[in-house]
Length: 193
Image (cartoon, rainbow, N blue to C red; front, side, top):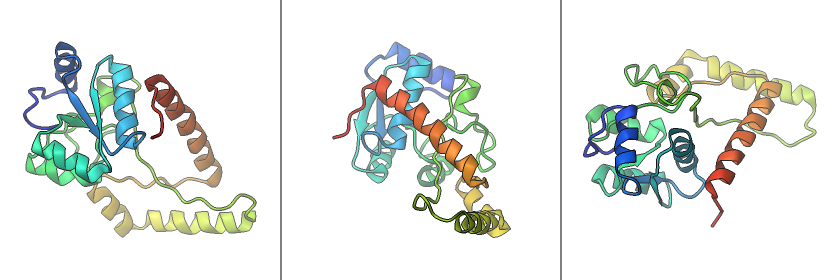
């Protein structure tokens, strides 16, 4: 969040937001972007009212957050970590289920809002009905790359954690995440432009 916001902890932010309903602005990279739905999940679970300000991408949103035109953003770690380290932005918490090695003193939102978790993740998809031998070979090679110490270290530098899983596990993750975020989108009334 922008340092002008007086809250220094998640409970203080919740109290501040409740004391100023409809006055605290929340930037996102656009309607339905991860930064938007992560904020909507927080609003639902914490019972707060944040005014959504959608941007055309995360870059402009972070720029306005740095300038104080908006007060808070559920920003991904890579584009915000250097601003947090420099003090230009204040991180109250990370949205992942566990603390990040790269920001070990920053708690998780879930430590204050039980059950909250919002992680950005990336995966490799291939066409349905691809022969299982090819799927297994790709999975083996991708997982080997993610296990490489240099790649793990580079990902960790900006708060990333490799997700080394089987194709079946990844399929379950996609199904679980689709169900979770569909509920948030429906509850928040989010519609595509």
